[in-house]
Image (cartoon, rainbow, N blue to C red; front, side, top):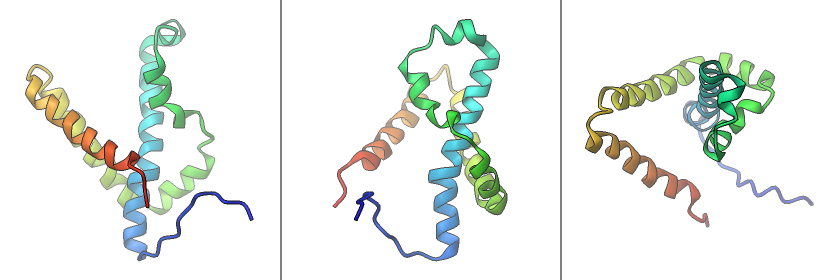
Length: 122
């Protein structure tokens, strides 16, 4: 047998839809939107000046989104809620760019969740 590393999880449909909107659809939409905005703002010459951060952050933008579009349509309410939460965070950063401690708060919260994401799982 092939070991894929997946761990089955039993949950109700509502929780599944909320979680998948946040951990699958939102990253895909975010990476795609970010890549579209960056590319259209800086063109190919500007992209040549980018580093690995942009490549890492937008990796999902390179995937064929045909499988995702149906998923977005079937889970539109939860995906919209996740996008709204992201927009709220982005607006807060935009509104406090000149207040370093406000922006630092987002980075600290994000680092805490990133550590949880990358922590070894038992």
